[in-house]
Length: 126
Image 1 (cartoon, rainbow, N blue to C red):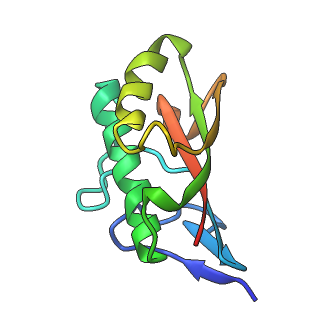
Image 2: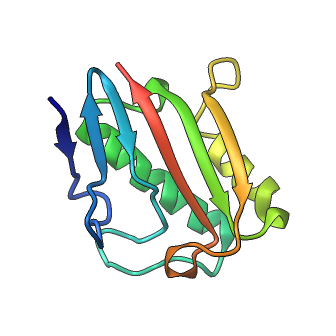
């Protein structure tokens, strides 16, 4: 049986999806963008601040499932401009130990929801 995970400390879903689904010890998160859950404001003017908010939102969803970044086994990063990769990667990398970092792909896309610059989803396991 799957368990639906939604945290009040991350942006509420804006469509027919949940923040995450837990099944057989695996957590599959929906992509997180840089919406501040307290203010509801979207952060897009600075890629470092934007990525930091995205990672905070991912952290909140993980915490709701009683996990943290050490449980993450796979990430997907969608970015609107590959020229932002170095700054995104620096923020992202600060959340992981390089020796135990998860598998990952980073893909440049033509567009993202709400025209954000970065969206990140993860798969985690207990």
